[in-house]
Image (tube, rainbow, N blue to C red; front, side, top):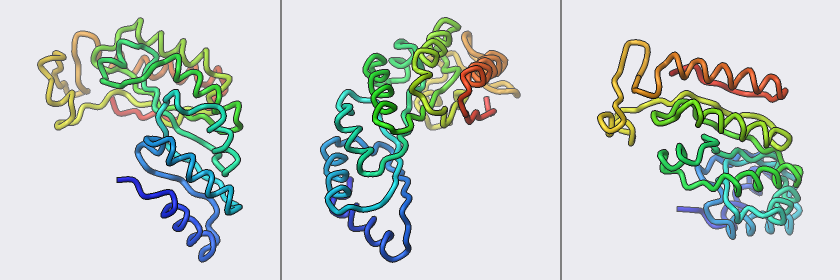
Length: 215
């Protein structure tokens, strides 16, 4: 359940006045689940002239307009972390991730235009990811490199026991080997190679990145 904008501002003011804290990281899993709530929080920060900077994780959605992003910047937003995961529409559907890549690109571009760092998350080696799918991800990165500030987290696909994939091993033909999980389209070796190619591209683009090595 979301706390009201007024309650959020009350907590910020308390920390700002009592402890002189003026940098905040909002750790809600989906800070912009309600865009109207985000706008109200920004309005209150601006109205009260709170001298703060803040960052958050957010979803890529068309409601994140350039005008809203400019207001977020004015209220002190310095960075937003977006979960892209893949540049392949098919893999995104398999992930059950409702993301329109054209809209995502527009939001990333407008985030940068508004003066906010656009940081992105990607997942490499989903069980249905092919070489063509991975190339689509690299193409997405190349197209949007001027607007992506850094890659906050890039991971190989982990399979937890009680996750959707963990509960559907047979459907995806997944078996576990000493080195990691495998199926017809993905092995630890394939994922390792793709992560390295991602690193190589990030370096070519002069982008900071964080890569997990667990495969």
